[in-house]
Image 1 (cartoon, helix red, strand yellow):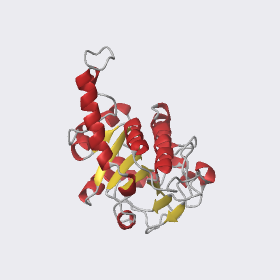
Image 2 (image 1 turned 120 degrees about the horizontal axis):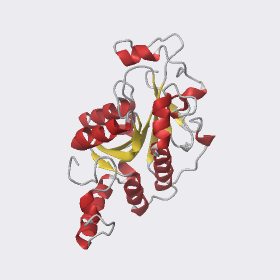
Image 3 (image 1 turned 90 degrees about the vertical axis):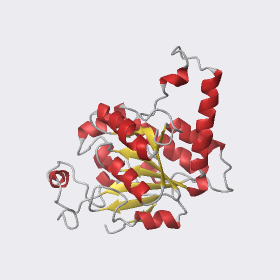
Image 4 (image 1 turned 180 degrees about the vertical axis):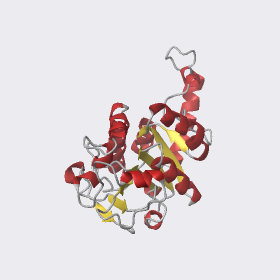
Length: 269
C-alpha cells in the first residue's frame, strides 16, 4: 500500500496474511492485521469521513447501460454489491454519502469535446440526460434522505470544477472513501484530485470496477496504492461499525435506490 497500512491493492488479503497458505492465520498475522485495521479506523472517523460513489447510475452500471461491458463487470465482480453494502453501512454509522453522477444535456451544452471519450459519449445509444432514469442511482445502492447527489455536465472527474470540494469542506470532510466506476478514468481521477486537494483518500478495492478486470487490479496495486489506502469493503465497514455513533446519526433509506431521495447539489451542471 501507499502507506503500508492496507491489504493488497486489489482488495484481497496478501499471502503473508495466510501464513503457510493453508488458510490458517498465524498469531503474528492476526497482530499485524489488527494493527493495520487500527490505523485504518483512525482515518475513518464517521464524523470526518465522506463516502463518494462515482457514476453508479443506471445509465452506466444498470441493465440498460450505455457501457454494457463495464456494467457487466461491475455486477459480475461484485463491485456494485460492495458499493451498496458500503452505502448501507455508511448510513448506519452516520457517515455522509455523496453520489457523483455524470450527465449530458440533449444539446450537449456545457459538455467538452476535447477528449476521445467525451466525443464518443455523443454517439452512445444510451444518453445520460438530466432528469431521466439513466442518471438515477442504480439499484441495489440505497439512497437516504440525507445523501447528496452531485451532478456534472463536463470533465472526467467528480471533483474538478464541480463545487464538490467546497461541499466536502463544509461537511467537515477529512477522509474521502471512493467507490464506483470506472477504474479506467473517473475513479483514479477522483482519487488524484482528492489527494491534491488535501484529503486523505481511502479506496474500497473490491467496490471498484473497470475493463478489463485485470486493468482494475493493476491500477489499484500499482497506482492508487501509491497515493491512497486501499482496503476491502468489509474492513471499512468493520471500522465504521466499531466507531462510536452520535445519537440519531443513522439515516433511513428513501427513494428506492433511484437517486430521488437525496438532496441534489448541481454544481455547474
